[in-house]
Image (tube, rainbow, N blue to C red; front, top):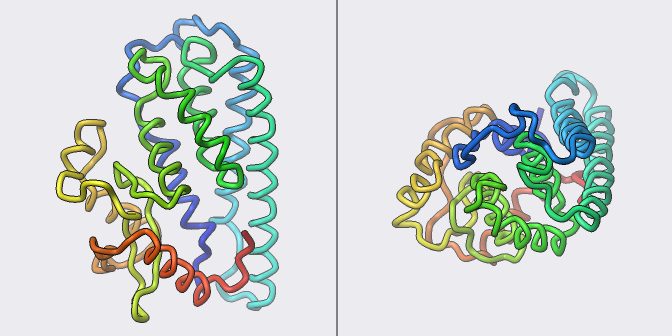
Length: 251
């Protein structure tokens, strides 16, 4: 059975969910110093719904099932994921209008991270992703927004704008001359990437890439994206991959 792009997307986002937040100076949530506990509970539930609808992919689709059935299940899964993303995004936008960006002192570390997950998955609303990034940025140095969340969202926004990312967190699957490649969308400074990643608490790029491929069940020998590829070339190669392996994926 061909793996779905949705399943690979889950891998990346589950990794994001489990990321530590070392930049936070204190655990205000544990100390009970959350200003908006009701809002915190709501954000945590929204993030949980986000993760649950994606994790369902791993427990569905018998690989020996009829291909037509697998296709139907795949489209249903994509529809549920999309509906959850859109519902969460709509609600988060209203929250931001009323409260501003959910900070650690406002809702606690876990709920603040949940807000990040929701906007990270709001690819259908790139404008809101950019706005959220700008709102989050000043809170990072204050310990009011997890630095790692900002790093991942920064790269997500750059990729959405078809610009080079900075930290190499956004991984692409592309098809080049009939060969699948897995690697980061073009980055700003590839030569200094590992040092930049180290400064923000990320593992070396190749270690990160290999861990994601391991979760997918891909061989370690799967080639990386050529460093000289432009953003436009990656987008074309990504489309070639989707056309061959994901003919029924709905955007």
